[in-house]
Length: 185
Image 1 (cartoon, rainbow, N blue to C red):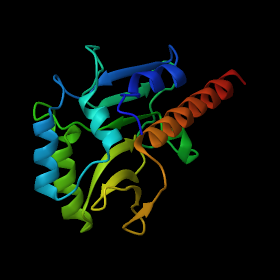
Image 2: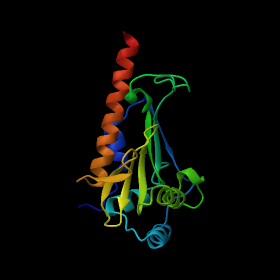
Image 3: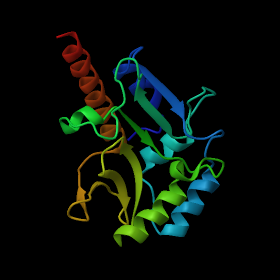
Image 4: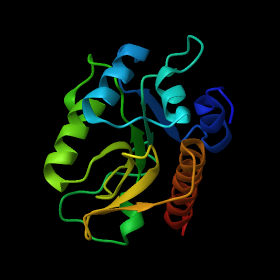
């Protein structure tokens, strides 16, 4: 395991000019912010996710949690009555932030409290695919899993945070390419 933040490298590898990437907080998360969350909820984040939250360097995105979406002119947003294959609604993803300066829906503290209250499962959401009711979480054993809303359970996955992030960025790029190809036909 490496202590290097791979966020920007993975974004550069999988995204192109058709994407917008935005920070989820005005300032970086601090070690104290992360430690306070872990203590409050009795869950220790995997080292890769902690590195993602803390980031490195002075870049705009580095690192506050991120919001990644395909530009709306490339992938128009679905309206409330639109129907179609499930994948056609999954136009972006985001991680959460430990920064207390963010809006509630972006903050780990808020989503953790809400998740635990609504599901009865001791886990913290860490990454969400936009419009997907399932969410990636960290459980009491510091393991990443995916919350399956229909069964109300965490399905274990044998992947690091970087593996999950890389996979989901690639899948988002593939969906965007498919959407573009379909629009050309």
